[in-house]
Length: 221
Image 1 (cartoon, one colour):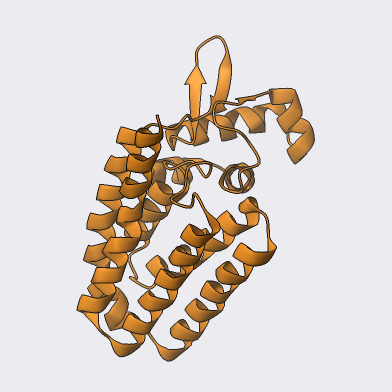
Image 2 (cartoon, one colour; image 1 turned 90 degrees about the vertical axis):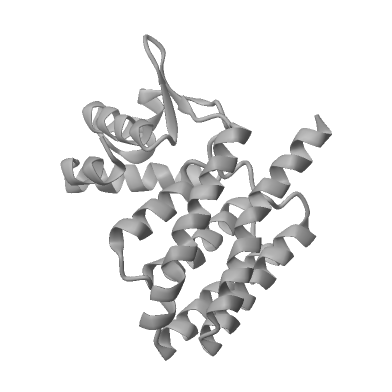
């Protein structure tokens, strides 16, 4: 079953619960490998046990969680090979979407993207890692939405937000975060010029930083 089919088969209330738990995962409020207890989730999200079970099953289908029979659900653990493969698929999808983004983009879209890029840059200096993650995803969600293909946008967001746990980012230092922020502004500048080649160049470098981060982690042992 695809992630889109999971969305279609889940009730509106359960979709909201899935979204809330997913946002907390993105915001690094759970640790990689952490077991999620039904009673704790019921209390935290003011939901019934049945609602929580359905939400956890949906998140396991999306690969945000791992289901271990007879034990329950835990946060997905990091897999360098899977992260690398996800980045490669993201690169294919986002470069394919680039021409559509430039074709559909309007002046007000540039304004919105700049606001979101500025929020991310501000959060680096003033917020915690959870808020930095959320503002980063907010920028990328707004960017890919401009392609006009909801299925593609959904796939890209899923790969970025869930298959790459928020605990593992290409930001080992503040300077790394600032570099990401600079690339966000470079993407916007290229879009404003309607410079497809320039936009593709920055986007490729931005996504491939995940591979660079993996190589750094492996080298450190």
